[in-house]
Image (cartoon, rainbow, N blue to C red; front, side, top):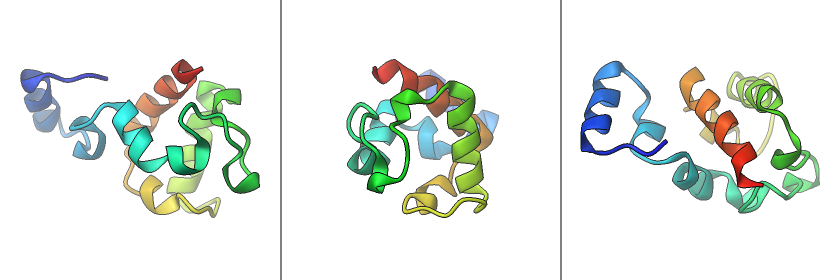
Length: 99
């Protein structure tokens, strides 16, 4: 999701979470996810999680939502707690494109 100046203003007024709205999913992923999951989602994070690129969009949504809600404990849960449903959907669409 790339946003120009007007797009950013519209996103801010629409109530979308600025955690991702001010960044592309790629930048968010690089800053918050890549250290454990790899630059292309290819790593098994902490030797526990399956590589992200092996997951479907719906599996990614489910996993992020469960971790955000505290149903599954993990190292990245603090970051995931800040995600809105819209952020999760956007990341779930983006992650498979990293293949």
